[in-house]
Structure formats: C-alpha cells, structure tokens
Amino acid sequence: MNILNILEEIEKVDGEVYERLNPRRAAMKQFYNMGSKVAMAAVPLALGSMFKKAYGQTSNTVIDVLNFALTLEYLEYYFYQTGASTSGLVPVGTPAVGAITTIRDHELAHVNLLKGAITASGGTPVSFTAANFDYTAKGTFPTVFSNYPTFLAVAQAFEDTGVRAYKGQAPNLMSNPGVLKTALQIHSVEARHASHIRQMRKAPAGGGVTALKPWITGANDSGVPQVDAVYKGEDNVVQLGVNIPSLGVSTAAATESFDEFLVKADVLAIASLFIK
Image (tube, rainbow, N blue to C red; front, side, top):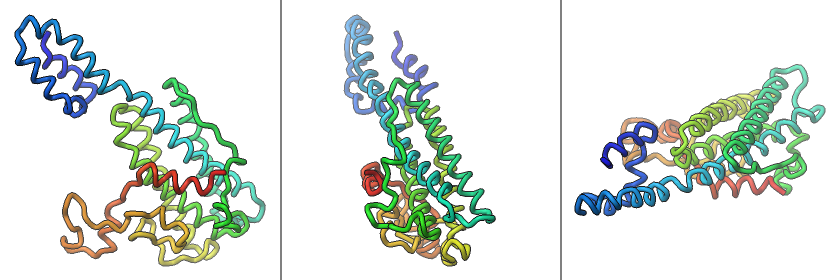
C-alpha cells in the first residue's frame, strides 16, 4: 500500500485533500517513522480515522448551508410573489411588471432546486409559507406593499444580502464541487437581480434615486439607513494586504471593485427582522 498513491488518486476528485489532512501532518509523519510491518498494519485504520475526520461532517455541513440558502430564497420568493399580486403596487403597463414577475420566477426556481438538492442529500428542507414572513420588518417598512419606491428599497436590501450570503458560504461547499457550482450560479443571478433593482430605483416611478449605481459603493449607498446592516464591511479598501486607493484609484472605486461577503450570523440577524 503506497499512501502517496492513495492521496494522489483522491486529489483527482478533491483538490483540497492535503488541506483537509493538514492538521494531521504529525500523524502522517508517523507512518514514515514506523517500521514497515507496523506501518502496513496501521495504515488502513489510521487512514480511515483521518478521512472520517476530514470528510465525515461534509454532508451535514452542505445540507446546513443549503437550508440556510433555502430560507433566504423563500424570503425573496414570497416577497416578490406578494408584490406582484398586490394590485396597484407595481406600475401597470411598465417594464417593471415583467421584471418583478421574472425575478419572482427565478426565486421560485431556486427554492425548488434547493429543496430537491437537500432531499437528495438525505436532509429535510426547511419549509416556509408567506404567513411566516413580516415584510414590514416589525413596522420598519409599514408601506412596503403600498408604496412602490419602498418596495424596491426593500428588494434591493434582500438582493444585496443574498449575493453576500452566497459568497460567504462558498468555502463551506468546497467539499462538494457540484453543489458549489450550482450555488455560484445562483449567486451570479442574485447579483444581476440586485443590479436591475438598483436601476429600477433610479427611474422616476421607482423613487428617482439618480445617484444610485448598479453596484455597491461604500458602507451603504441605498439611501435607506434602516438597512445599514446589509452593507456591513462594504467600505473595506484593503485587499490581500494592499490598500487599493494607494494604487491610484478613488476610495469609492476601491470599495466598488471588490464585493465583501457576509457571515451567516449577520445574514440571519438581517433575515430575522422579516421572519415571524
């Protein structure tokens, strides 16, 4: 049995195998220090123990991330479903009707895909109905479904949160390339939604927020202080230890050039405002 050959074969399907086993380098070293007979007898058991530690929690971790994502997708889907079905909210006869309907359908597709992925992985999908959500955020946005600009402002907060949440969970999906690929595909669509909603807010009917850009600038460019938590850390200008403005760009451009992630606790704190 050649342990290096074994690891080389595993590396073909999991490029992170050495990183996973890194904390057990001392144990690996022991294989080479043991006598050949002892080593040959010990390798199967020792390897089994190490790989169980390295991979044993992968399934539960992935399912947890998927249910986390599913919660956010339910939050968005029922928001757009309610908005699209509320008479007089979205200006009739404008492109906004089609945009909101399309985004709603995208979110429903995400919900159904994530539910299927969780079930296929042996997990139990979380379940929500529209009645589980309070889109006024406990009275913070009382006109969310009667005032179109407010509706779009909340939509922007949801989309920007979703983008940053998927980015934050990507490392936890590294063990499952297939799931990671799908999560990144959803992530990019959420980013397109966020950009489009921002453009809709710039239109006169959407509030005429002409200073708003298709991307995030600084700690909160939404113009809605109640959603500051959504943009926590977006004023960061240091990447890989490099102060980006020192490279000859403005501070605004430095914050726009790199999107930051949100950790799970921060995302849940935001989402909890809208969950009953």
